[in-house]
Amino acid sequence: MTLIINTLVFEKEIQTGNKQISLVDRIADLGADGIELRREYFKNPDQEINEIGSAIKEKGLLLNYSVPDTIFDEKGNFNSKLANYYQEAKKLGAQKIKFSTGNFYKYHGDLVSDLSTLPLAEIQTTVENDQTVISGNPDTVFDFLTAARKAGFNSIGATFDLGNLAFMGFDPNLAAKKLSPYVAYIHLKNPMLTSEGVMQNTESLDRGMYNWRSVMHYLPNDVQCAFEFAMSNDDIIKDEMKKFHEYFDNLR
Image (cartoon, rainbow, N blue to C red):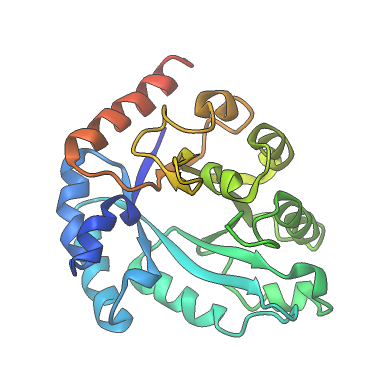
């Protein structure tokens, strides 16, 4: 199973001012298959995108691109910024780009016409259940992807984010069963409530609200997975990677 490291894993380093390019060698040395870059971590996107794309290619890592924006805005309009994000993804050499759905239920445009403006055949597009009321609802993701398939856009898939379901109060097993036909990418993290009642990601897939192995049973076992939870050192990351690979080895 392909394992991607989202740069949020190194949140501490990012918060102290390090750029994502400083993580490329480290992720390669950990033995990950790829890196997921976060657009919000770029301080100067135009400059950094050109630099980091080449560095990742040299290391032979897969590259996915996480964009903190929606397909549809709060009024239901098709997002005019999407074309720019795809240009960035092309410069990076990304194979996947990820958005949130946004307010699809207010959309009254021509889905075929709007989606046809995007290079969907060149870069796989996924939409994620995020931590907002609308886009964080698995039903929104399901309904948009169902409409997209009916419109002939079969390449658009779902990023199933396990941890976000906890933040939004949804049952992960039910969500996994519903979204499974569309899932093209999986984000793994396992949150739990702190003693102060705050939902927070843990440093371990085995510590949190969910049995991640149980949820994975309902999801495709041939799609990329990514770690998207902060970890404090490389030893912890290696332990989590070992745990992940052992799970899939046992499925054989």
